[in-house]
Amino acid sequence: MSSPTPPGWYPDPSGQHAARWWDGTQWTVQVGPPPAQLPRQRLPEHVPTDTVFVWVLALLPLLSLPVTFLYEPQVRYGVGPGGVRTVDPTSIYTAGYFLLQAFSVLLYAANVVLAFFDHRALGRRSVVRPFSWPWAFLSPIVYVIGRYVVVRKVAPGRPMWPLWISIAVVVIGVVVGIGRAVAVFQQMLP
Image (tube, rainbow, N blue to C red):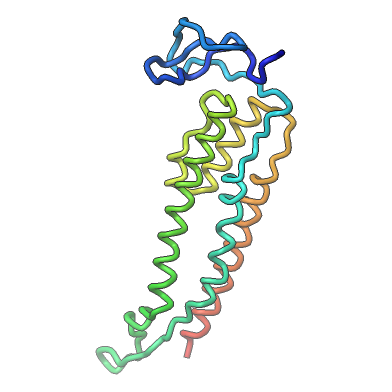
């Protein structure tokens, strides 16, 4: 009976050493180089590279689109020094504004947690040195792009639908954001 994981150096499951040799059936006593020096083994064809976590990570920003339409700033004007009409900067702070901010923080946290679980799932699928999940703190699209750079090395030729969908969702978000900003600025014009 053949093992689904080919022989090679993998991160030590006990955590006591950087790497341990898997002979195809069991872990041996041989310990090896630190994980940064471990060669990336190709994944067998039957091992999937997409996880439910990366799919949710790709689609999660779509949830923010309806929430952005809940926020309608109430622009108030005042009279400044010299009788000049000015916008009251506190007028943007409505309940919708605070709801949008709270939702954004929750979405940000969810992206980081999903990246962590995706990273861990790739490690369990024998991907040596999967892309580091803390990059999701910078942006989820950075994590998804980096993840697929590594996946292409260990599983060349596989489809990358979550990556393309993530990019499309970012583009849609930018277009909607620009449209919303134009609408708000038009509202502010006398």
